[in-house]
Length: 200
Image (cartoon, rainbow, N blue to C red):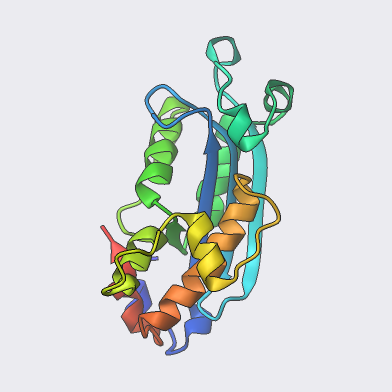
């Protein structure tokens, strides 16, 4: 969703929607590491979830795949080997994201993997503007320099419950709830104000 689309949307947050995305990966470097699970939760500006998609992902080159970070995400190599093929998973992710505002916590991480993995399988697509709940949380901190901004700490702060940590769908759902708290704190009440949330 672009700034122009937001400016012409009916003047209610019900008509603005966010694609809240989360990845679990084998490491931190999108150039050498891989996505093993992805999720997108579509939530409107009033906090109602209208769609979702999640899957464990099988890499595009299984012979070259090096499993990692299982101690964090709990996804086994066997689960990865039977996951949805990467290209199909990304096609569905790009499709479900269309027309919504891409949102993530520490969005640079997720966007790095989204763009790198899409390039590997020959998919075109680029997110130009997005919402980063990490950056929004920092805006709301004010003079409180002790508040932590990781997803776990923010969920504790706002009383958001997660079914499981380091699970893509659970984390995306929690981030969607966090987004609603931050939107309220920042005083964003109409579609034409949503662009104030963007990070480009």
